[in-house]
Amino acid sequence: MSTSLSGPGSAKQAPGREPVGSGLPRTSRTARNHAPITATGLLVKVILLGLTAGIAIWAAFPLVEAERWIGLAVLAATTAGLFYLYLTRRHIPAKYLVPGTLFLIAFQVVPVLYTASTAFTNFGDGHRGSKDEAIVAIQTASVKQVPGSTQYPLSVATQGDPATGPLVFLVTDPQTGAVSVGDAQGLRQLDPGDVTVAPGGKVTAADGYTILNFGQASSRSKDITELVVPTSGGALRSSGLSRAYEGKAVRGYDAGCDCVRDSETGRTWTADEETGAFVAADGERLAQGWKVDVGLRNFARVLTDPAISGPFFGTLVWNFAFAIGSTGGTFLLGMFIALALHSPRMRGTNLYRILLILPYAMPSFAMLLVWRDMFNTDFGLINNLFGLGVDWFGHDWSARLAVILVQLWLGYPYMFLVATGALQAIPRELTEATLVDGASPWQSFRTVTLPLLLVALSPLLIASFAYNFNNFNAIHLTTEGGPFPADNPTAGATDLLITYTYRLAFGAQGAQFGLAAAVSLFIFTIVAVVSAVSFRRTRKQEEVYS
Image 1: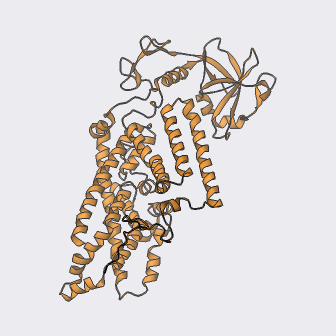
Image 2 (image 1 turned 120 degrees about the horizontal axis):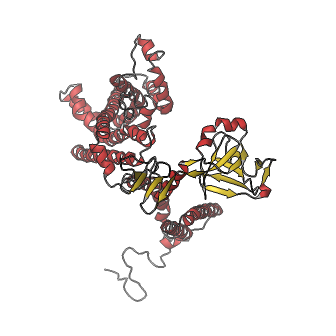
Image 3 (image 1 turned 60 degrees about the vertical axis):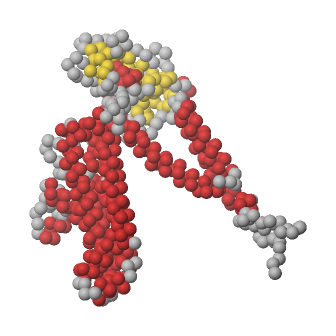
C-alpha cells in the first residue's frame, strides 16, 4: 500500500531545494551574506579602505601633472572596483583572490612587461630622456665664461644630508638683490623674508635649506663644479665656492637642419633618429642622446656582435654547468645522507639531523662572505688547513670549483630534509620485497627507491635548478664574477648570465639597460623552456610509477 503526497495541501519539492516549512535550520547563501559584522572587522575594513583611498589620491597627482590620462583612468577604475567589492556582501571568493592578483600584477607582471619593453630601446647612459632634454643637456654642458659674464655671490646648499644630499645654488642678483635657488631644472626666485643675506650679497641662511660650510663644500667640490643651472641667457656655473657666473652656451640647436652647431669651431652634429644621438659627418657622436626604439637590435647584438656574443655564450655554458652541478651535487649528497640516517641500524639520528641542517639555519649571504675569506690565498682556512698555496679566485677552474663547493655546503641541508621526508613516505615493504626476490641493495635502490624519490622530488629539483641558474648572491658575494680576462673586464670566468646582465646594466663602462633587458629575456626564455620540458617529463614519470 502506497501513500501519495501529491494531494491537496502538499507541494512538490524540486530536486536539490530545502523543504519549505520543514523546520530545518537555513544555511542558504542569503543567510550567510547577512551574517553580523563585528566592530573589529568594521574597523579593519575602514582603515584598509582609507589607506587605499589615500594611496590612490597620492598616486593621482603625479599622473595628472604628467597628463597620463590612461593611467589615471586605470587607477580610478581599480580604486572604485575595490570599494565596490569590499563594501558589498557579495562576491566572497573575489575578496580573497583580488588582493593577491593585484600584488601579482604590480610586482611580477608589470616589471616583466617593463623589462620586455626596455629590451627594444637604447635606454642607458646618455639615452635616458627625450630629445628635448638631450638638447638642453648639450647646451648647458657647453657653457663657458665669456667677457662680460654676470658674476653672482654664491652659497652652496642642500635640502638633505650635507655630505650626500642634492646640491643647489643660492645666488643673489647683483643689480636687484633678489635671491634665487638654482638646480638642474633652472632658477626659482625665493621670498625675501625666507632668506638672510650678508653684506656683499652672500646668502647665510634660507628656510628649508642647509648652507654648506667651507669644509663641507670643499669635500663636494667635484659635485659643485659639475652642477649646471640653466637660465634664459645660458647657464650658471660655479667659479670657486663663493662666486658663480652666467656663461654662454657654445653649442646650440638649429631646428632648420635638426642639428647642433658649435659656434667656436663651426662643427655640426646632425640628429640620427635611429640611434637617438647627434652624429657628425666623421661618425663622432655627442655623449648626450635620447631614448628611441631600436627594434630587435639589442637581441641581434647578443647573438652576432663578437664583443657581446662571445662572452654571452661562454657564460651560458658555465651557467648550465653551475646550475646542474649545484643542483645535482646537493641532491646526491643530501640524498645519500638521508639514506644513511634512514637505516634502522643507525643510532643517534636526531642528533645527526640537527647538526646536518645547521648550514641551512645560517644566513646564506653571511656564509658566502665567510667562505670567500676561507678561500683566501694568504690567510684562508682552506690553504692553511691543508698546507696549500692555491690562488683559488685567481684562476678560472679553481674559482669555479670553489663556488661549486660553497654551493654544495649551503644547499645539501635542503635536499637532505626533503629526501628524508620522501623516504619516510616510501613503504618499507617495497624494498623488503625486492630483497626477498634476491635483488642486491643497489638494485633495490636503483629500481624502487630512486624512481619513487624522483617522482616526489622532481618538481623541487626543477625549482632548485631555476634558482641556481639565477643565483646572483652565490657569485657576487664570493668571486664577484672573476677572474676577468685582461681584454674583457665585463664577463668573468665565474659570471652567470644574471651577474653578467647586472654588470651590463650598472657597470663602470656605462649602463646599457636596453641590452641588459634583452639578456634578461634570454634568461627568462631559457629557464622557462627547461622548466616546461622537465615538468613534462616529470608528469610522464608520475604516470609510470603511479
